[in-house]
Image (cartoon, rainbow, N blue to C red):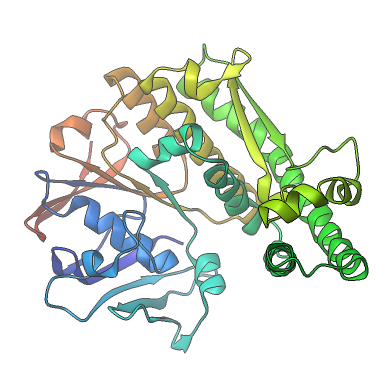
Amino acid sequence: MPLTTLKVQQVRNLADVRFTPSPHINIVYGANGSGKSSLLEAIHILGLTRSFRTNKLRHLISSGAEQCLVFAELDAMATGTTQALGVERNLEGVSRMRYAGADIDLTTLAELLPIQVINSETFQILEGSPSIRRAFIDWGVFHTDPMFIRLWRGFKRVLKQRNSLLKYGKIDPSMRQIWDRELVTYSVQLNSLREDYLALLKPEFDQVLAGLLPNLEIELGFSCGWDQKRGLDEVLADNLVRDRKQGFTSAGPQRADLRVKADGHNAAERLSRGQKKIVVSALKLAQGALFYKLNSRACVYLIDDLPSELDDHHCRLFCQYLEKSSNQCFITCVDKTTLSEFWSQETQVSFHEIHQGEFITQDQEIL
């Protein structure tokens, strides 16, 4: 399902970029500020309509432009037929998405182009808030079970209603029981999907990590967001007085968290910067491996500044893993030679030089 053509217009300093990427490894190199990360950002827009760097459209869309456009051709569902996919966003925040000549919604778009990002922000899986780790889990559940999006939307709707009643103090016992019962129903099902997904992900993660950092043992655990020794209905009833004072529901899937431990300690506090990059990268790579195993489709990986935080040995191991995978990879670096020597002789690597928002060379090599 790789992108076979890519066109980018008015994304930051990329006024009009058109190129044919390799179906496997693409190295995008150039000086800082040349537009390397902007290219990755554009591909992210193509898959999710948003940037991974900013929520402010005025920074995302080129100065003086009213909208940005990203267009590609791809065989999204691995059917053997290439179709056109395009995403347009304007300064008012309106998004337009089309695939195979028809308008689509965001859920369909995300299904068509599964994207994984590995950059400096990926460290937040270890160092950031639980919401970031929940998003990591839910990406995988979304692409694993078609029931997830319905359950997730239903849960968010009920949670919002319950919180509104708590906030304004209008929750009488009969009304509370109705919303609590519905909340518990969605929560139990949602939690089951998350636990099932993590059970599938753990062996994939262990295998990837063993190849990248064999002497490090990382344990993945999961907290569902409430005390599972008791039913959620009981927990909600016991927390009612506190929830009324706070104005929101304090227990449930919205409080779930992924626990990542090294030698029994919080990995964020235990590991070096380089080890953290390998661990969070292994989590992302494991997700891609599991996605391929379950769907017979590959992901698109956007890897910004791969050499940073890694020594040559681990950078080579990382590249060796990527070339053995089926994923299409877009990898940025400043100097072409930095990553040139890390691939096997049989690997076809496409190098793309970018300068002030324009591609000035493109060549494919058998290294």
